[in-house]
Image (cartoon, rainbow, N blue to C red; front, side, top):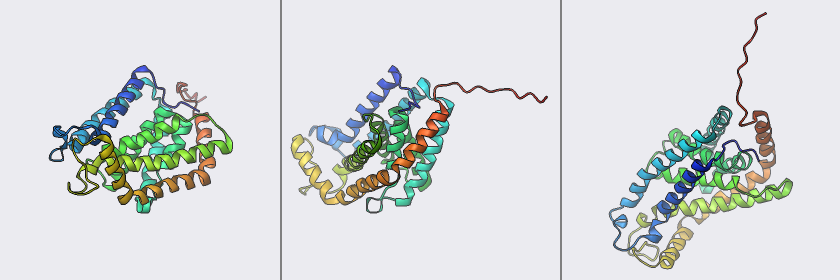
Length: 266
């Protein structure tokens, strides 16, 4: 695996802190007490939606300071543009989303740091193209960044074993992304008087049970569709895309300085 973005201690620490902040932003409904002000007046999603972009900005700055060379920036620009163009093709219809398989394959080839940055930048660019900017966008960016990050951390395999591993990860990522997005808005999605409703201060297992029922009854079909789409695309076009990305990585030779040579007119 080529490391297009080198993760140094500071950038690794920033990435870990951002992920911890993200876990809190997504998982606060399971952790907040009954007296917490986060559960009142729908403030929590807005608070975290304002906070997460700052966290992501710090992480991206630290990663760029640590080792984002011009060739990695160029590769990031190309792949994020491709991903942003792919995403509207499915538009989430019945869970058919074509962007995540690219995040998985690129994270696999170029490493976890590149996968994290690519996931965040791709969803941001896609939102600008489709007009999907809103308080949900930071959650989508972080969730997609995790997809690319996880792909870069998978064990090394080759051939059919690698495709099988990536397909299994693609299925898991498709389901996990859907659950994470549900968790970000579940407390305010329905009224407080149903068996699916969030109860502030209730035991974790009770709220978790309610949340899983909510996800099962509202979005499981879309999540399964996303997982199947990832598996099908990785199995069908994954080998060719991996070969293309690895060939590009070999030619780029990341971490080698770009040297400009003067042309002698004689």
